[in-house]
Image (cartoon, rainbow, N blue to C red; front, side, top):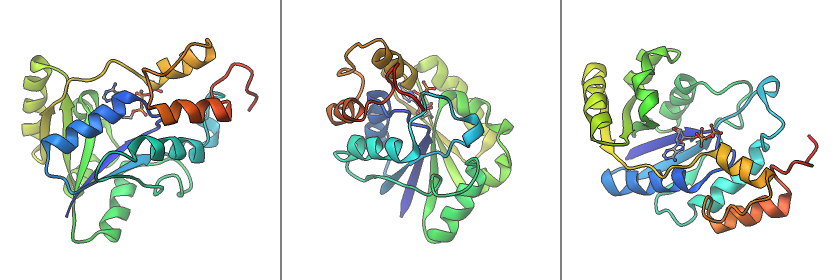
Length: 199
Ligand code: ATP
């Protein structure tokens, strides 16, 4: 089986993430994509960071309609900071017969050699990077060829970030066009990201 891994903090998941997942599903023959919220160590946690369970719950709501995508708790359940090379070691153990594909944005591919144990990562997974436009596509193609075990897809991003969503909630603005409806409801019901939330 061809297994994709898409990691992030997802604080919260937004329509840009959903769009990327749908496009990767459309453009590749991956059988399954594990969407994996990372563990943020307590000393790094900001006051507007939702808990791991909340971030995972929102992700589940966001990916429920994406065929083949499922939320993995692997990194949340581990102690300490999430390191990709350790996560891939674990996935290799869990899925010895599968090939692993690590999905990432353009910037990440271009700085990939700064990742801890990047050579081990490259040995365990094929990288799939998303290029935003033609110019970036050419640049990424070159970087991918140099790394060897990497592919580039052209995916026009939705201009959106989790930071935008959190700021909108804080300012009391609607977030309907930024996150799936079920996620907007979850954020409202749990009072996430509001100015007056104490944590
Ligand atoms: P923040 O604003 O808090 O930094 P973010 O919106 O970048 O968060 P992350 O959880 O850091 O969200 O993103 C997870 C992954 O999704 C990363 O690989 C990131 O590059 C990618 N990503 C983020 N926003 C978009 C988008 N609008 N379109 C496509 N990919 C995105």
